[in-house]
Image 1: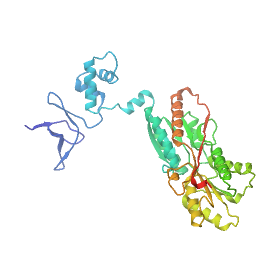
Image 2: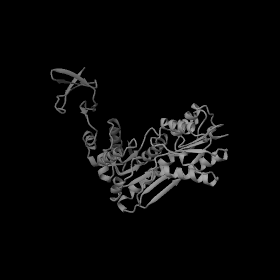
Image 3: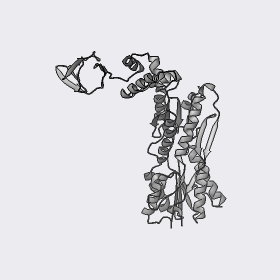
Image 4: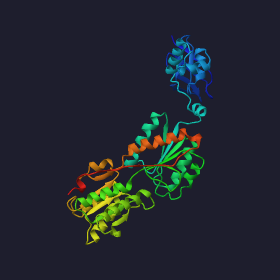
Length: 390
C-alpha cells in the first residue's frame, strides 16, 4: 500500500513525499518536479526529513532526550547509559551527522584551517611541498586552503585577503618573485599572526623560516662539473631579487674561485621567466656567438636546464661528451629525459612537513605572544646522472 505524507513547508514550496519511495514530489508553477532528498522512516511510521546538515538538536528531538545528553554520548563520555549512547551513535551514523565546524571553531577559538600561498602549483618542488603540508595538517585535524600567485604580487596580496576572510588560523608562504616590499606580511606579524615562510625567506626581522642551503647545492653542483673536467661553465640564474637566486649564484662563483677558474660575467645569465623557451634562446645565443664556447651549464632549476639541453642538441653538440648540464630541484622528468639530468634535490616533502609542524606550534602558542625567530636550513642532495658524467 502506498502511503502519502504531507510534510511541513520547506522554503516556499509545499512538499509531498511518498513512502516507501525516497522521492519528493512537489508542484511548482503548474508543473510537477521530482527530486531526491533524504527521508528517514521512524519505527512509528512517521517521517523525519532534513534537507540541511543534521544537528545535535535534530538527534535529541528524534530520541526524545536532551541535547546535552546527545553531546556527551557523541563524545563517549562516562556516565551516559550504554544503551542511550549506542542509540545516539547509531542514529548519528544513519543520518550522517557531522559536528558543526563553525560552532567548533567558535568554541575553541580556532577554525582548524591553514592557508598556503605558493608561486606555482605546477612546479614539481612546490607540489611535493604541498604533499608534506597536507600530510601533517590532516593528521592534526586541520584543513588546507591553497592559493597560487603565478609569481604576481597583486595576486599574492588578494590571496592573503581571501584567506584571512576565511578565518584561517595561520599561513604558510613562499612569496612571488615580484615581491620586494613585505609590508603585507609585516602587518600581520605585528599582531602576532602565525606565519611560516618556506623556500623563499623574506627580508623581515623576527620571522620563522625554513629553506634549503642553496649555496651548498650550487657549490656541490659546480664542483662536480669541475671534477668531471668541465671548466667553462655557464650559470642560468634565477630572478636576482630572490635570495635563493643570490645564494645559488654565490655557490657557483665560490666553486669556480676555489678551483682557480676566472669568473666570466657574460656567462652568468638571468632567466627572469624561468621557462624552457627562454633558456633555449639564451643558450643558443651564448653557444653560437662565442668562439670561446662554454662546455657546461649549471641551471637554477630543471626547466631551464631542459631548455639548455635542447639548445645544445640543436647545435649538434653531444651531452655529456661536449657539454655537461646540471639542474636544480630534481623535477620528476629529470630522470626520464635523455640523457637523464643531474640535479640538486631539495626534498620538498620534508620541507612541507617541517613548515607545517612549525606553523601548528605557532598557532598553539599564539596567545602566549612568544614567537621566536627561527631559521631552519635543510641540506640539499646532488643526484648525479648521465648529463654530467664524462
